[in-house]
Amino acid sequence: MDHASAQSLLQTHGQLHLLKYWADLSAPQQEELLADIQQTDWVVIADQARKSPTGESPLNAARFSEPPVCTCSTENEPASLYAEELKIGEDLLRAGKVAALTVAGGQGTRLGFSGPKGTFPISPVKNKTLFALFAEYLAAINYRYGCSLRWYIMTSPENHHDTRTFFEQHHYFGLQRERVCFFQQGTLPALDMHGRVLMAERHRLAMSPDGHGGTLRALRAAGGLEQLHQENVEYLSYFQIDNPMLQLIDPIFIGLVARRQSEFGSKVMRKAHDFERVGVFVKNNDHITVIEYSDLPAHLATERKSTGERLFDFANVAAHVFTVSFAQRLSEHADPSGLPWHRAVKKIPYWDIEQNRKVFPPQPNAIKLEQFIFDAIPLAKNPLLFEIRREEEFAPVKNAEGIDSPATAKAFMIGKWRRWLAQAGKTLPEIQRVEISPIFALDPQELQRKLDHQEIDLTKPIYLGP
Ligand code: UTP
Image 1: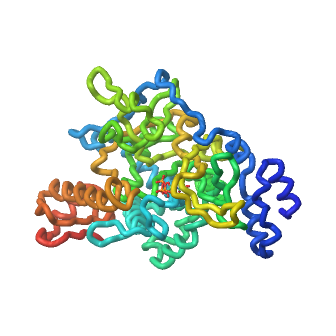
Image 2: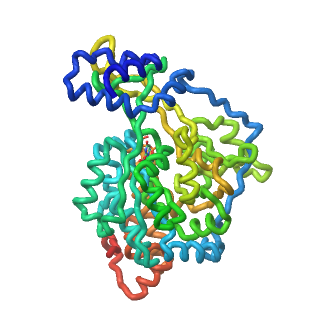
Image 3: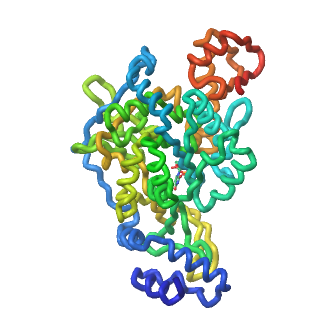
């Protein structure tokens, strides 16, 4: 792209202000600006620029009903409830039909940590990072099922280099380096409240990652979907970087998706309270879909069934299993994967074109555009919801303090491992910290077997690892 074509493009879209300082820029800066303009999807921007600042999504309550869920119970272990599915899932893992996919391209602004979120130390005794814990989990699965799962990790232009360097420095945490595949997600510029594209500097647009809904498009562009297809991998197990307690590769869940011939399965859990800040699953006419907590009207959040239970009680855990063929189909659409764009009003620093200076706004000033992976669910055949136990799998690390923070995540992890130890007949003193590496035990049954042959000192912080 050259200056003339940029000018004509921007003129068409009413965004000519982006070239206001062109003559003052150095040659490399001009190149950077042209590159930003070239990589922006102007069809999306033009469409979004026309909309009102907060978009239009009044939810019509009358259409929503309760979605079907494959439940679990507190009395029975999932393995006994879903024995057939467990076997199917385990067979798929042994046959190399599954790959792991982590989305780690987010900005992590709420946590306020300077590096990629995956490099955040989180485990309660050894202070292992999120990436290290995930790598150990995958290593344990590889060992148990005699496989070597591919692990795709989505980064953003902002954290790609640091993420790769971190893995290099840690020798890929013992995983085969050629099985760990990094790919970068796309970006889009933010808009001001009048639909004008914001600049971060005089030669840069105010770009941010385009949301986890951009995953499939980015994976396809990086050749990952073709690679999976070539290698006859059928299922992708998708998870976020911010939940260190999730059972990342869950044979029962994979088996359920396979047995029900579902193209897209999601883990769900019961809400902790009416206004918990989690998306909830609903049935909207014939489609299963997620309503974000910020969009859920209070009367729906509090609605009850005749039994007194919450009507919309199943929350999105942000862990999914979907088929590679569905991912291919979805990502082939001309419009970026056919998913809607969500508009979040945020505080975004920008270059004030009129005043020719950087501004750090005290109030939200801009629209950030993002797509969400869960919007793919209504497009899938036989979508499936699988209930998990929150106390076993949910410990989000979102905020620096308070709820969903490192402190709460560590407390949940300790609580879980304390229960596992109790099941194995070891009761810990209340104050004692404990950490169990997945390499030592992936589940309470494995822990019990190992501890039958091993004494542990319950008077010190306990670490059971490789
Ligand atoms: P969040 O919605 O929590 O966003 O992402 P975030 O950017 O990490 O954090 P905040 O909102 O700025 O505090 C949920 C998951 O989706 C990934 C994140 O890395 C995290 O694993 N994600 C999010 C992406 O990979 N790309 C994105 O553009 C957004």
